[in-house]
Length: 449
Figure 1 (cartoon, helix red, strand yellow):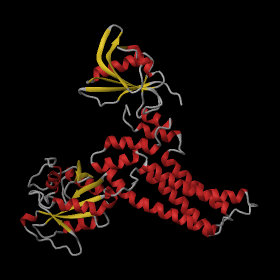
Figure 2 (tube, rainbow, N blue to C red; figure 1 turned 90 degrees about the vertical axis):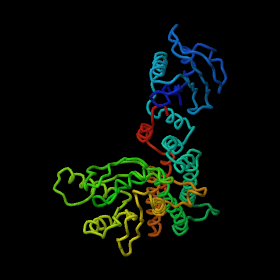
Figure 3 (cartoon, rainbow, N blue to C red; figure 1 turned 135 degrees about the vertical axis):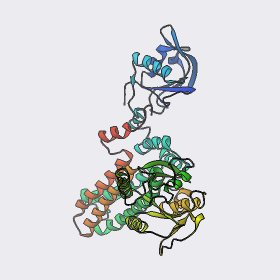
Figure 4 (cartoon, helix red, strand yellow; figure 1 turned 30 degrees about the horizontal axis):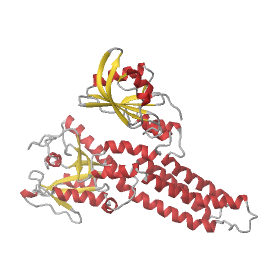
C-alpha cells in the first residue's frame, strides 16, 4: 500500500536528554533532506546514521543524528527516517513543524504500527503486543508480550484455523464432487470426533488463558473490613509507603483509596475502603456505600479481621456479603493475640504493622489465580481480552456445529457453523476484520507508535 508521509515524536513529553522523531512514507528521506545540513540523505544506504544539523532556512535549530531505513527493511516496510535531537518539548516541536511545512503530516495514535500491520509486516496479534510491551510492569507481563510479538499466538490460531479448514474442505469435496470413487463420503458421524477434538483444544486454551489474562490485566482487589482492623495499615505495608492515613480513630478512611502493587509478578489493583459499620455521619455513609459497590465489582476480596478480638456481628455480616466472591480472609494483629475461630475457613495470619506473614498473602493469591506451571514452561498463553472473546465465539460456533451434526442435520448446514468458527479465529489475527475495528484498536496506542 502507498500512504502519505507521517511524522511524530516517539519519546514521551517532558525534559530528557534525547528525543526521537520518526518519519515514515515514500517522501520521508526527501522531506528530511530539505531541512538537514550534512550529507545528501537521498544518496545514503539503508541502516546508516549521519551527523548534521536541522536548519530553518539559515537558522540552526539543533545538532542531530539522522538514521535512514529504506523500504522494505523497516518497521512499517516504508522508507523511515529517525531524527535523534536534544530533549525537551520545544526543540522536537520545532523540528516537527518544519517537517510538516515541507510535506509530512502529523501521525495519528498508533499509525506507525497500523501501517506495519496493513503492509503485512505484523499480524494483528503482533501489533497489539507492542503496547503490551510498552505497558509491561513485571517480567511475567514482558514474557507474555514477547511471546505474542514473536508470533506464538499467530501460530496457535493458524493451527486451529487449519484444523477447521480441513473439515470444511472435506465437506466441500463431497458436495462438489460426489461422483469421485476415491473420495471418502463425509458424513456427520465422521466429522463429530474431529469437532470434539477441536473443542477440547479450545477449552484447554481458554482455561490456560485465565492465567494469561490475570498476568496482563492484574487483579482488581478490594480490602474490606470493619473500622480499625488495619486495612489501611495493610495497604501501606504492601505498598511500602504511607498511602493511607492510619489512626486509632474509627472511620478515618471515608473514601476509596486506589493503588497498584506488583506482588511477585502479579499486579494487584488495590482499593482500600471505608470500614463498614452503622453510622449517622453522612460522609462516612457515602464511603460505606462505595465500599459495597467496590465489593460487587472486585475480582478478589481481602477481608481483614482483627485476630486480637473475638468475632463481631459486623465481621459475620462481611463474611456473608463476601461469601460468593473470590476472597482471602486475613487475620490481622496476630502480634496482639489469636482469638478468632472460624470453622471451615482458611485464614492468613499477619501483622500489617510489623510486616509479619505478608509472604503468605502472596502465595495465596498465586494459588487462587495463577497456574505457575504455565509460566515456567514454554506455553503460549492468550492474555488479550479481545483474543479470548473471539476464541469464545469460536467455541460457540463449533458447539453449534457439533449439536447439528449429532442431530443428523444435513452436512452442508453443519458447514455454516464451521465456517463461522473459522471466521472468528481469523478476526484474532486480523485475517478477517473490519476497518472500524482496526481504527479503534490502533487509536488506543500512544502517539509515535
